[in-house]
Length: 340
View 1 (cartoon, rainbow, N blue to C red):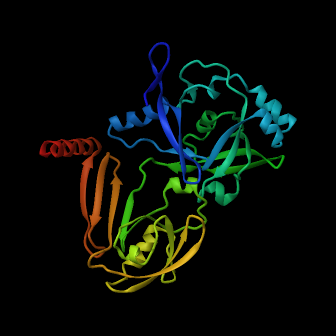
View 2: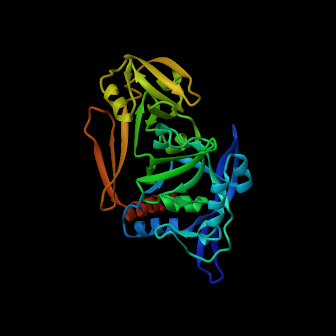
View 3: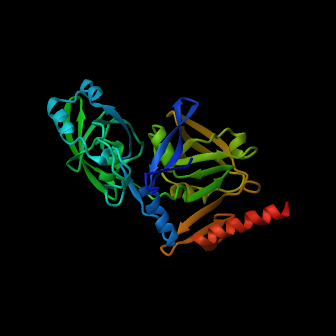
């Protein structure tokens, strides 16, 4: 950790550790500089008691490759000259102000790279429309050549739709793509059912695994619960309950409302490898009742937690401002230390 600063002491980036899977079941990490423009935009909003602005993504993992490697992948003479003609700008190599798209500090000449799509994230517009495919070389975004990850990030910043020009199988393909919006809030609603914690599919799962179905994602399983006894495993998507499709968490809740204690339920679920399984379990609502927890952030920066011990009971709401929420966490921590 730490910061990166220029000769005058101005902070340019945060030095962060990024974990990833180098191979199945093998974790690794790399250190990278996170542009301070991204952090400052969010921190300024939080200091004002506001929700940080959302950002947009192509919904794909991009990898810079050299022009020599791109030539072997089918980059033609015309595209090569186009990439070389825009070289030398500081925007490709420098640290950026994401709002304005201008380099914050002078940088040396940027490398002439080409961005290759190494993986298209599941359940995104890019995967459903076919606008992006693995192995595509991105030539331009919004009719502007891009040669670095920073340039691509600036090109899609706060844009709901972008124009794509990619090189696929040696031919230029032009299309429009709706970007994927991220608010940075993470999981907003969790349902506890039969000892499983259920939620909408996390963005990290969509990015790392080939999710081919829409369903309710099981992120955790409690030991001794009906899900544990009947081997309904976590990291699976529940796609049907007694033959009724459950493409979303709300659809699953509608099915769960009708189930009674001791009732036998047939669950169709799909694991992250795409294998389909059927599991039958007996509900134990006395010791493993269905509950839900929801987090809502209002326009005035109010964090609202709504919870219900049972689906047929009224919910309980509690509101805290963002700053009040942080202070309450600090007070609870101090109280715990004092008690110890």
